[in-house]
Length: 192
Image 1 (cartoon, one colour):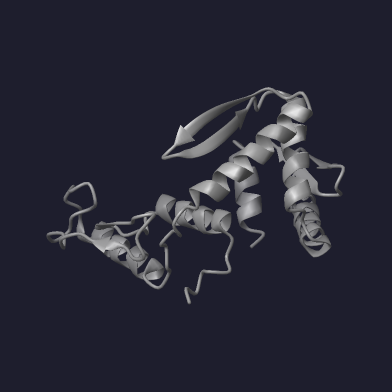
Image 2: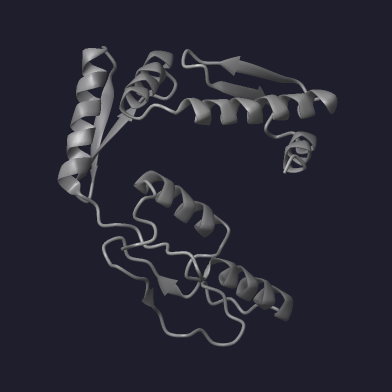
């Protein structure tokens, strides 16, 4: 049994992307979506990065430490069930059509991808409603989210940073603030 079997695919993909963005995914190997394990590549020569740039000792040590932190994680993605993915895409497309929302369809390796206009509030609301109907948040998850948002809002306000908390029709809070404000980033990073 795969230790990640009970983690939803979307969460595993998000973890994979986060780890990749932080530079810790198989720095010198490849990861296959369909395979059961990463395929190792030949060992790199001393102090090389994945782009074959020679790096200094400090950077090489950082890369080694970063790789070690992710070494125990199974980042193998499960095989894609194309029929199931396409059935879900068809259901989403039907929902959008039934609600008068325009969408486009594309394809990636046989898997249908439904795309909406993210500048259209009605399309965004229809997407939220559809996914809420198929996978609603638990009350505990809503409460945890709302507590985090309240904590962030209080910290930003205390630091003199403008912010606005909104609550959607499901009771889920969100916060808006200037995300390019370095002081805001510092305040939120210090929340822990």
